[in-house]
Amino acid sequence: MTDDTPRKTSPRTGVILGAVAVLLLLVAGGVYLSLGPEKVASLFGSQPKESNVPIGGPFTLTDQNGKPRTQADFAGKFMLIYFGFTYCPDVCPTSLTTITDALKILGPKADAIVPIFITVDPARDTVEQMKMYVEHFDPRFVALTGTPEQVVAAAKTYRVYFAKQKDAAPGAEDYLVDHTSITYLMGPKGRFLTHFGHAVTAEAMAERIRKYL
Image (cartoon, rainbow, N blue to C red; front, side):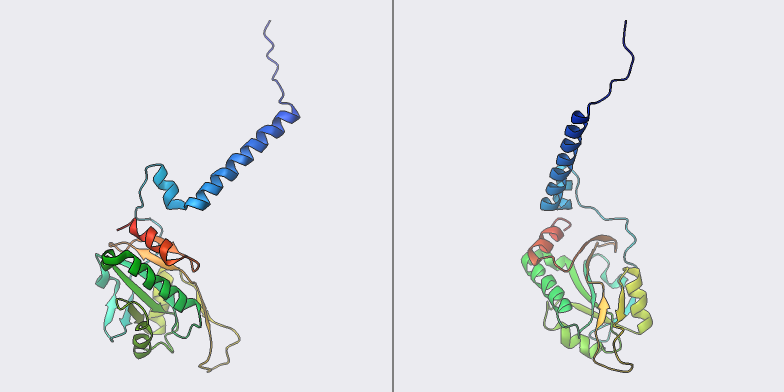
């Protein structure tokens, strides 16, 4: 006679199985963090491809030479886009230096990339100020400014937050601007590919970009 009574798992067995499951999750998580998402994806045969994340879009701004620019001017090129301001004491110059160094590491392949710096402080970042500022970085940099409305519209398309610090005195010219510190890599068709946080190294940035070129 067959015993159809469901068999119960002993408490000890349940504890062992749970521990094994946790261990497997920790190992998988460690592999993901140590190798990075692109490397893990490559182990399973997938290649980097353009994302459907709704980041980026039309903008109308003015470059450091006083020339009107739109996103259409960069069609067919990869874009490395960073939003910041020229009076930023450390975060912005560090990020632009990282971009500059990453392009050097990429060598001739960097010719397919346009580094773009968009201000979030149009009141102080005039065309002349932007031109003087980006001369300290890669000569390929396109520095963009515009009216407050144009800058807000551009930042909105890239989901960039920025705001003048609340303790800034009304009418004062010496103030800081809080802002998102992310570098965006956009594909030749203007679609978002990936992004880099402030702590990324030039070597890591170059390695990830190379996979899309």
